Amino acid sequence: MALDLFEAPDYFKLDDLLTNEHKLVRDTTRNWVKKEVSPIIEESCQKAEFPKHLISGLADIGAFGPYIPANYGGAGLDQISYGLIMQELERGDSGIRSTASVQSSLVMYPIFKYGSEDQRNKYLPKLASGDMVGCFGLTEPDHGSNPAGMVTNFVDKGDYFLLNGSKLWISNSPFADIAIVWAKNENGRIKGLIVERGMEGFTTPETHNKWSLRASATGELVFDNVKVPKENLLPEKDGLGAPLGCLDSARYGIAWGAIGAAMDCYDTALRYAKERIQFGKPIGSFQLQQKKLAEMITEITKAQFITWRLGVLRNENKATSAQISMCKRNNVEIALDIARNARQILGGMGITGEYSIMRHMMNLESVVTYEGTHDIHLLITGLDITGLSAFS
Ligand code: TGC
Ligand code: FAD
Image 1 (tube, protein in one colour):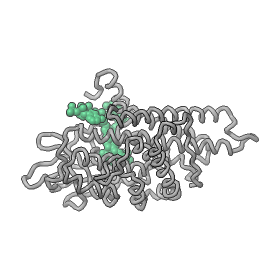
Image 2 (cartoon, protein in one colour; image 1 turned 120 degrees about the vertical axis):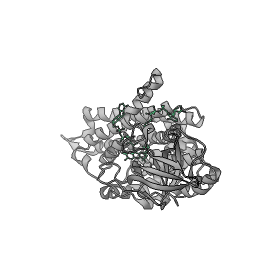
Image 3 (cartoon, rainbow, N blue to C red; image 1 turned 60 degrees about the vertical axis):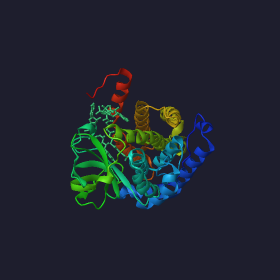
Image 4 (tube, protein in one colour; image 1 turned 90 degrees about the vertical axis):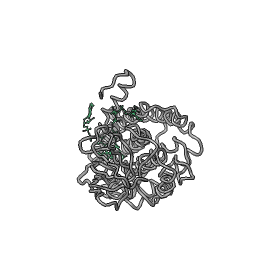
């Protein structure tokens, strides 16, 4: 990739609403991405390899469990700092943000919120330091948008639980040390289990040939009569609301992350439009290109403000799941749209790995699907405003 010249757009001075701590956290992550991610990410994507060597650096900048209290190894930051970290990581690459979101919101969060004190002490410090990496198994081959229909199940065998079933499309599964697995008990109630690599009957085959999120490892979780110790059950919450509660936190992070990808595409296209000469003039002087750029900065600015406001509401424990859902859907949609238009501004150069735009565009095709598809989020808003469920 060409030299990382990124300058963040801030058209309505959102910086004035951030605290010094927010800016410090954001700038630390931004500088780390410029130094560690930008120089290697294109090659990782071309080779379809997750750059595992970044794990310790992610831990050092506090990207694993930013809002988990310090006594469990987390950074003890607020929700806006968490969001800004996700924004800056996804500015680098959605796959790197994915790894941090899964570790923070889908592995550390359920252990922190629904786990026992022993489980918190056993796993959280190692997850925060990157000595242990986790993944989150909700989706199944026949149950994606409708996780309530899951068939993965466990039976109480007295000394242990016997787990059977499989999960598909699981970020980080090929190398994760532990998996938070959602499965039904004999009564059909959904519960969370901590499954550890090395347990007999537990395998994690990798999913190959992805055109999207190529710098993130994706795979399956297969459980063939796995004996899970009873102390690995998350005791404090059950039902579908338990995994969906984790998704609230992860979807919030994605809302910020998508802004990062959009900002990078806009910034790249703006710089290119000012430098590229056709018909004796910079292409940025043509009205059609200015329209694209003007619409991009407008959408980025709107996304920045709803997302900042959502962060304030989350800090006050007032944000609703439906607000988070709207923000995730909107921001990923505008980011994809911006990536597509930015790609056009670069003409043929836009399809090359010299620039980040095509990589962002391909990544965002996963982001618009995982953590609830665009359609599912429209229906969540529909339910919230009408009181009528399209699902049942
Ligand atoms: P429904 O009847 O609406 O709800 C069941 C129970 O859950 C509660 N609930 C929530 N709780 C917390 N947060 C939320 N967002 C919640 N939404 C619902 C609800 O109150 C109820 O509780 P209770 O006590 O009454 O039982 O459930 P439903 O079966 O009708 O489904 C609703 C629907 C479709 C919105 C839900 O299933 C859904 O969101 N589907 C999308 C599935 C999804 O997002 N999967 C993501 C998998 S993980 C992933 O993609 C990780 S990618 C990671 C990366 O690499 O970054
Ligand atoms: P389906 O549910 O089969 O949907 C197919 C299409 O039908 C979609 O367009 C959808 O919007 C539409 N549709 C479905 N139901 C309705 C409806 N009621 N009304 C209108 N349209 C509908 N999952 C995990 O558990 N953990 C992970 O770490 C994880 N990581 C992922 C990483 C990647 C790269 C990808 C691509 C996915 C990942 N997922 C993960 C899975 C992801 O959450 C699912 O792909 C997603 O929830 C959609 O499920 P599905 O792919 O089965 O699509």
